[in-house]
Image (cartoon, one colour):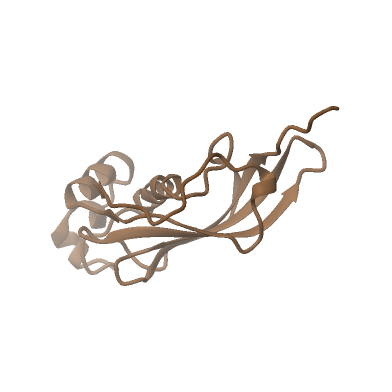
Length: 162
């Protein structure tokens, strides 16, 4: 796995008040290597089209393909490399959508683009809120390989009591 420089704005952690609909965040690129595809599949998704090139050629994928969950894990890594930086870390409250429109192949270079879809304070927990984020993982040909919409819990800034 090789991470290349991210073209993102770096900065400190972001609180709920720092997010706005329409904001976008981008990562650098990460190259997917065959050994990691095979190792991930062997441990977490041991299906023949993730483990054996000959079998994979005869599958729906037409060749060796990374597990979708491997792609999701790489996406998480790339999200951390963006300028998102939610205070308290990436704490998910659930997915609204998760699609794998194309397989990821050994040698692909993946990158992530995130768009803030919604920001809303919590009604029951005034110290936090939710940020709804569409994350698209793209390959070197700018083709989507994973699209998911996640709801993240993000703390609000502490208000002075003066």
